[in-house]
Length: 584
Image (cartoon, rainbow, N blue to C red; front, side, top):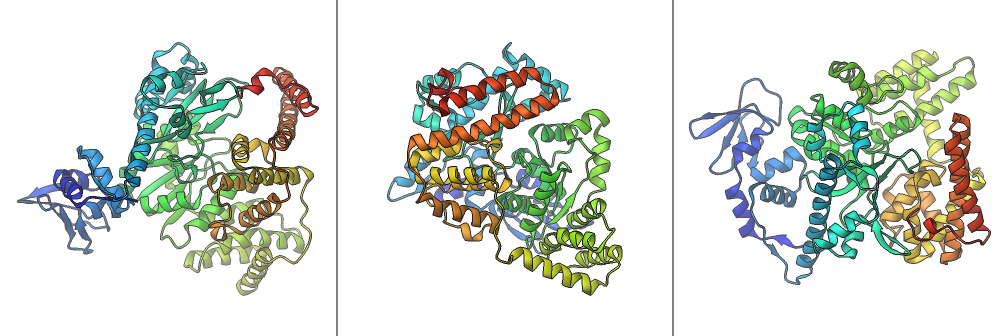
């Protein structure tokens, strides 16, 4: 990667306002030629933090923290040096120059900057369309019905994608962007009749990095029969889903100042919280927090409060977050939401004080995990107690020795009427069995076997396989681990085993199996299409069953027609026009 030139760094240092930057994290008052305030790096009651605005330096006489304007951003906002320089350059209008003898770095940077420019212009278009178009009336009504006002929607740049096939494509062409750039930015999708807009008839949430640059979009369906309900931009040169936290650009200064960040699941949850004054809130865009996201949160604040749904996926996400947070020096807590309520609903129905109370009662994640298991546990027999120990083994195994851990072990031992040492031995033995299971055949359903076979076929089929992987929605796969495997393969398609050894064992095992199987799976577009259609048929059958159980007969009829079309294609018949051009 090319380096920022020393001359550019110096121009940024001179242009930046040190007092303005630091004031985003602590209140400063002028004292002669210097500015004083409470130290943002440790708790204190008497100001001992001093800022020199001329030299762009800071120093705390209490904790001895000190440095320049770049190190301040590195420490307080979790940036590396390059990001700190580039963020200040953006903020103060300094054009950067880079040292690159080969010229390739400049070319890659220009390509990336064009994609960022395209995404920014598209976000502006979507935002304007939300407020100016008649078509977006239902979207405006939906957002208003969720209690979201125009001010917060405009602040986050929420927009609407027209239902027409090529509005964004035509606009991008007029602005001088190519079809290749549309695809690379995740805005264009290739069908048999050519390129068309990926997002249509959806509410658009710009996904920004910590510097506020649009990297992609999250899109919510508005029509009842529009599936899937939520889609994100595909992985590409700019957007990486596993690194993104929705709202981080807005939440960062508030989270670092307060030393606490709230993590919720959805876009509207973040909007509602910011609107209610909880400006230190971000969303994981789903419950599956990645190690990279947890690392970003740990750099953002010392205390991370999870406000996830209390369902099985939320419980699993919290356990993964607990393991990822180990050793990062972060306090991980859980705010217990009422059943069937997300933060957006809670705030709309009960107001800001409701969430303030829940957040104030947040408990350490270990206590939450133990409480959740104990509340569901049956303890009528020794077998029941064994099952409870098996459930708690991974919970205790994901945290290191601490007073908190000892307290929770004592709590469980009292509940089971066991000695603490006996319980510790049982937990360790159960944990060892989980990590190194005795040799036995693992039961895998026929559905899961075919899903693994399809993933293997994708790996063996080159670029066609990569495209087929991108077609898979979460509903096509029967387990969260297979969804993780799909995501891993998309990110590492050219070298799927690189770095795999450091991932969680189950993911590493399945991806390794898929890569090995790839050598024996047929590599042809015909085989790929047949396998995908089989997955699509099963997805539709599951949705048909759900529609029937809920009494949604219109939806049931529409899905049945789609299933008939898929079966016809599987039997060798002609696909429907909407399927052949990729726009269905």
